Length: 87
Image (tube, rainbow, N blue to C red; front, side):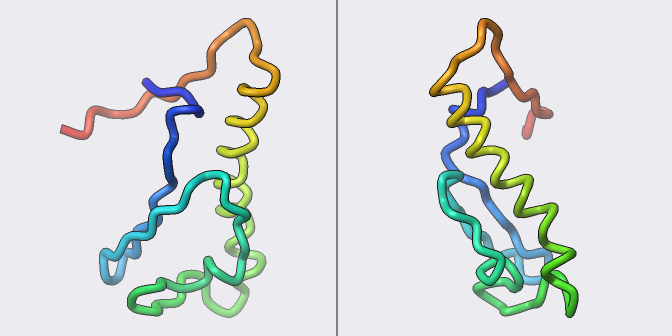
C-alpha cells in the first residue's frame, strides 16, 4: 500500500516503442505534450485527441490534487492505494 504523498512521478510508457517518460505529479499537464510519444512520435489518440486525452489528463491531475489536499488539510483517516505485488 502507498499514500498519494508517496508518488514521486507518473510514468507514461509508449506501447509501440516501450519508451518511458517520468513526470512529477505537480507538473502542469498540458494536452499538447501528451498527444504523441516523445521518443518514437507515435500518436496516442488520433485526430480527436482533445476529447480522447482529457480523461487521462484529468486522472493524472487528480493525483496532485489529492496530494495537495491531504497535505494542506489532513483528514482523520488515511487514503492508501493497494497495488499487486510486482514480483
